[in-house]
Image 1 (cartoon, rainbow, N blue to C red):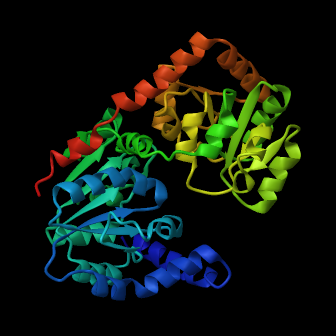
Image 2 (cartoon, rainbow, N blue to C red; image 1 turned 120 degrees about the vertical axis):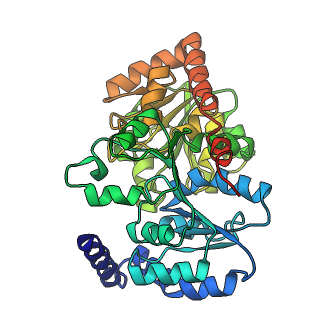
Length: 407
C-alpha cells in the first residue's frame, strides 16, 4: 500500500501548507501538535478505554447513542473520542459523554503506533465510512477488537472494483461490521467478508433521543401562534428561491428559515427576497415576533428543536451536493420535502417510498405539493404519520450492536 501511504503523506503536507491561510486546516494542525501530550495528561493509567472514531459531526451523532449507552451500562470503562474534521472536533470538544476528546493523527505508520501506544484502547468503534488502513492493520496486529458501526456499502466503492483488492484486505481487520442494510451485507459477502450483521442505522435512535430532549422555545411558539408554518432547515440559495417565492404568495402561511450558512452576507440575501414582515431570532422579543410572518434563525443549535413547530419541513441541499438530515424533521411526524439530489441517502429514498417525504425539481412542483399538503388535511396527516412511523420502525440499532459485543 505504498500509494496509500504516499497519498496520506501528500495530504499531510497540503494541510500544513494551507494552514497559514485557512482557518480549518490551521485548527486541525494545532490539534495535531498537542494530541499526544493531551492523551498523556488526560488518560488515567489504570483505566481501560473504549475508543470511538468519527469523521465529523454527522458521524458523531450516529455514534453518540452507542457511546452514551455504554457509558451508562459500563461506567468502569473510559471513553476516548476522536475526530478527523475540525467541524466535528470544534463543536464537540467539550462533549461530556467522553473522558477524552481529541483529533486523530494522520494515518501514517509512525503516528499510528505512537497513538496506540499511549491510548492503548481495549476495543475500538469506527463509525460509518471510517476505514483507515494503518490504524486498522495495527489494531488487528495488537489483537484489539475493532467494529464498524452504521456502515453502508455501495457497488461503486473501491472495495468492489477489480483494482480494489488491496483495499478489500482492510475490511478483514474488523472483528465485526454492523451495517445499515441487506444490500451492504450481500456486497461484503461477495468479497469474502462474512462477519456482518444488519442492524440498521443508529441515527434513528439518536433523533428519537433528540426529540425527547428537544428544547422549549417560547419565542418560536409565540411566532407560530395558530398559523400553518413551514420550517426550512439547512437551506441553500437554490432552495430559498423556491420556498420564499411560495411564502411571498401565501399570506396564510408562516415561514421559519434556518439556513445552512449563517453569515451576514447570506442573511442579507435572504432578507432581500422576502416581501412580508420578518424578524431575526437573535433580535426577536415577545412583541416584534408576533408581528412577523418569517422568523430567520441566525444562530446554531436550535434546528432539531424547531421542527416540532412546523406542519411541513423543507430540507435544504437537494439542489447541490446532497440533502441534509431528514430524520431530525421526520421524527416529529411531519412531511418532509427536498430537492432532486437525494439518491445517495437511503433514509430519503425510503421516506419517499413510505409516503412520508417528497422530492421536487422546480418551483412549480413545490407550489403544487405545498398547496395540496396545506389544504388537504387528510393528505397532510397521512404523510406526517408515514414519516414518524418510518423513524420509530427503524429504531433499535444501538441495542442490537450492544447485544453482540463482549465487554
